[in-house]
Length: 218
Image 1: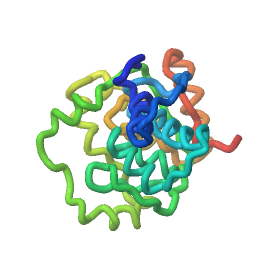
Image 2: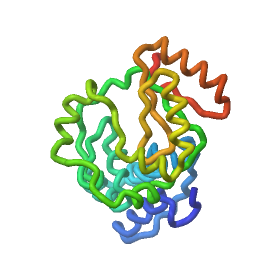
Image 3: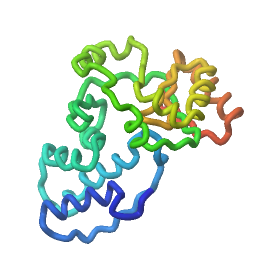
């Protein structure tokens, strides 16, 4: 994680200094819980947290529209963390709107320790992957149609080990989906029992992998 001006959290701070024409005396400390290069938006969520916190710290009013505009200057997936919840991202992802949340079901997130640079994945594509006009139709049936990530084949080419991880996870009986551009996976199971069994097996067979059960009751 860059400890300099390239850090997205620092960029968020600099935007306020530019907007308010003043230097802000702020110390940023980041406790990194979301792995770097995981496809989970760790850096982007850090930036969004700074954007939301600075106006509160300095007691300065700012509209959500302004925050979204500033967020889009930092990165295409920063605005979604300003809104929170289930989000539809349009254009490059920076145009966002809230949609009805989808039940997470019996789901785990798996981090096998493989990091993939988002820039490398997108640079390897070179063409449009889908028809944007079909997005809302897909969302309407999101709980019934198969899950899909069009970035997965490109991420697998860059890191073949990711494809092997996907194969192992598929053998546990779950529906495997690469998260973002990689390298974490979402695995959705048909029942709570199947999910718990898979977690137990993965802990035993792959003790170095980190597993987060996000869809099981606490």
